[in-house]
Length: 529
Ligand code: AHR
Image (cartoon, rainbow, N blue to C red; front, side, top):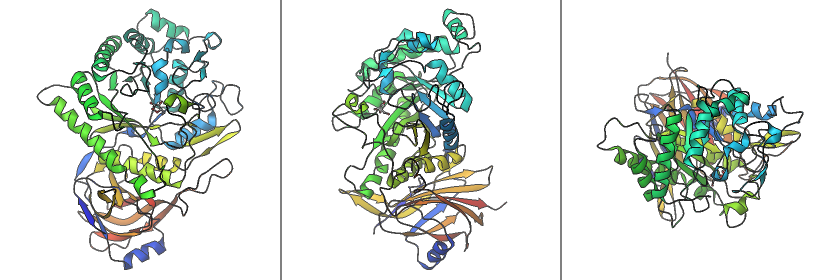
């Protein structure tokens, strides 16, 4: 095995359950990998919005997911109480709505006022009918109930600049105007105060209603942003960055032009990425972390380039505002065909490991990735799956919920030396995919390690630079013998993490530990007082 050494950026590692027997095995094997932790090597704060999520009018995400009127499982407002409970457990901090492709054909005015008077419209993105019974006030009320930050994406496809401006006025205007009065008539006296607004969805994609080239998109987004800020100058704006990374797409050019054209106006640029394992090749599936890191780093460089030479510009961050595994529940040649499958992806054990891969990358880039939204929250490519009688938690739910506890921690630049592998001459790819965060409030380091090797356990020497480890640790661990194991109704306990307190056998500034093949570990290392 070759060994890669990576300074100033912790690569993702795989990790086993730290049971006492595993620990003693680790003590006897000589290390093949090395991790060095240092709380003084700071990348940045893990922003809480990195644990955001996404709800689109698509399939059963809203209707039958978040919202089910007249269900015994719902509250008096029609919100499914069991789903709210599961969302709380997931640690969701922010919710993006109403799309997605859906928003590029959406008229927000259809979704306000008395529900029985709202029009049913064909959803032009996915081919369904939308009753509009869940609209702006329902979404914002839902976020308020869950203490989640709302993120509203405007229609930059078939919509107009003025519709976007009016939407901000409806939500945020404190004075008496026709739109704020409409909000009052609809039951909301105080402004909703929506801070985060997206300037359209995937406008780079030919599948998008109202798809534009970069030049036309910049013109639209600049004017929309200007008009929206006339309605509320405090809002934050997210430009539609790359979602199309296909062979013919100039994704670098799109982002460059958008950043050049909108710098000074925007606060974030978005990236979207879905991955899959069609070839049923586990190590190839998890090798895609290189692409995720690369896309972030290329866009970060372009942000710096766009801002060079201009003082007093607002900072621009990356919002990775759609990400997940999505490849089975896709049908047909277009996204419109795909919508008919309702995107009800069933997740297995290897998909759960992929959650660690994405989140490790976001944490390693915590200085620039200040928002990330799993797509989506319920039923549609989602960790929560309902039927009219209840719900179950998919395999991906558990790592997502555990990582979310690291919000507000400080991401650390961690030295990682790991055995590597190659895929199609692409390499070296470290088997150990690692990120680490420092919690000052808990006086602990969280070490997140994904072992991407299908078959090799990797014994690792783990040191803390200043010898601050106390010897007390807690290990969250996810592993399974069958990569394809899924959960379903009544059978949802197969891919569950174990959590164990561990007394480390320290020697010098650290200890040896073995990360089993195909596993994800989150090791909370308590520091000395
Ligand atoms: O999340 C499903 C779809 O994926 C979204 O509507 C779109 O933005 C992306 O292509």
